Image (cartoon, rainbow, N blue to C red):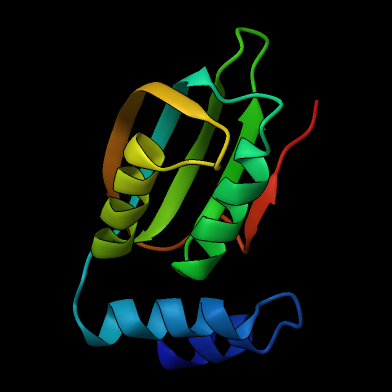
Length: 126
């Protein structure tokens, strides 16, 4: 992304300071931006798992989404610098919300991306 395009994007009011920090950090450190889809199995619904996932994602400067599934799992997508995404993957595998019981975490479709597809980390409701 050239400087003019970056300035236009960052001047939009919908972009937060953390998104600016995320993008400039990734660009200055030459760290790859990646995207990964995930699904978490176990006792993950009715225990504020989505809310804690959103909060942890924002804390790490990631963007993406999280939602419950009809199968009783939680699924979503993470995007950001590879080191932050890896930290979030570990959190999803081992921590979750205080009352959750994680049995298994699956990660699929991991790929390098040129830019972010999302502007924040949101909870998707049916």
